[in-house]
Image (cartoon, rainbow, N blue to C red; front, side, top):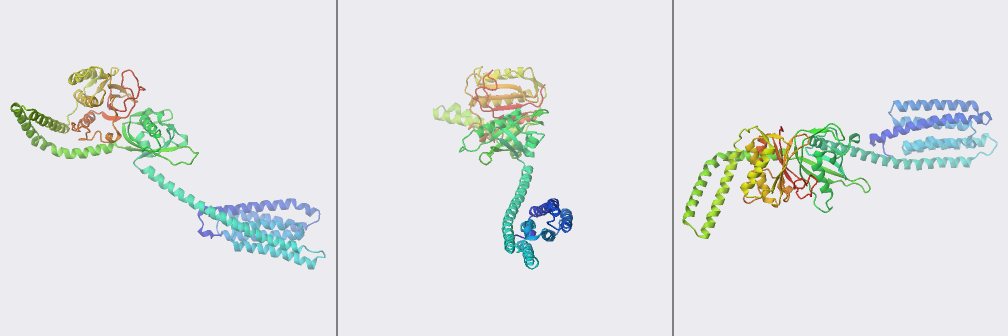
Length: 561
């Protein structure tokens, strides 16, 4: 048996609990012997005085051992050796008082010997068995000379051999069990250390982590996830579980999770970008509030759970708003230093090139020359538009906070936009704002919507109501303006750079339109974002439509009147 000093604290504590159990068992055995074997005293089979005194002394010693083992947990082997020695002495006295081998009390030796075999080293356990065997053999040998009858010497020898056999078998089994317990204790300690490390890492990591069931039930989340989503109480604690669909603001996350969970197992894992809007709940299964919309990047992973157990998945949340703003600020820092030189060094040559092209067009009339001049004019116009956009970035004009009545503003804008692009009047459909007004500079709002509608024209089918402008209130009562078309949605790869300056997927674009639109919204206390949705774009179809559109631009106004 391994040294107790090399055992873990859990294993040593198990030894002390076993010793305490041994003392309690000793008290019970002493009382039973005093109660039931007193019958043989009344019948004159044993020496009643010696037997009673021995039992009473044995009970008192057992009580003393119990108190000492409970209050003074030191020198384990010394306490165990003293208890086993007292057991052997007490049982030997009772053995003599009851008449020796014929009394059958030799079986009581198995109690201290088994305890020594379990808790003591093998040498000490064999020494205890040797003491008991020598006493039994000695008593039987003494009977040859002192009693006339034939003593059961053979039975005494077999009893002694049984003592040694029991000690050897029990000691080996106990050693194996102790080794397994020590291994389990060490593994448990390692597991607790790993859990503590994981808890620190998960709690301190900047990314949010949610633990979801197969039906979208939230079983847990780290502080970062609760902060991003605005949850007050940690999900999963005290049975506080809820589904993502229980909160309207979390529906984009639920939809992305459903799409990911329904994919084929061999398909690549996808996440995407979602926007969690403002919300405030004081009652119900989900309580908390989110004062500002948050733009999140999602990533999903399956947990390798044992077969037959409930499935679990992880959702990693990353707040990309700060990252996007940082990237934009870095680009603007470089661009700001070039703005002044661009205004003087580029615009003048562009004007000269444009004027020279106009003069050449008067003299050159061949098809090839005309095509080349048109190419020059188009590129001059493109570069000039880029310069104009860059100059706009440096003009932080204070917005005019006059309220804008959406029911008057949107139809007027639709009429102007369709006439300017020569479109049919029913292609752009405008929803009812319910008489609400928003505080936004009218010229800025017009520029933002013209930019969004211009993008929608490139991808819309051109059918009636293929472009839809819908004002709707959000969960907190603030007004939102949705601009949506029936064309294909923006891919997650493009979405990651959608509002970055100079990023474009069009050969004729400058990559500044959406960035300028977002800057104008921020300058008016509003927010422009792109969110994934599956809603019908036809008027009157409602939120559950055919699902032809997969995304929309959303302007969230800062103040609604």
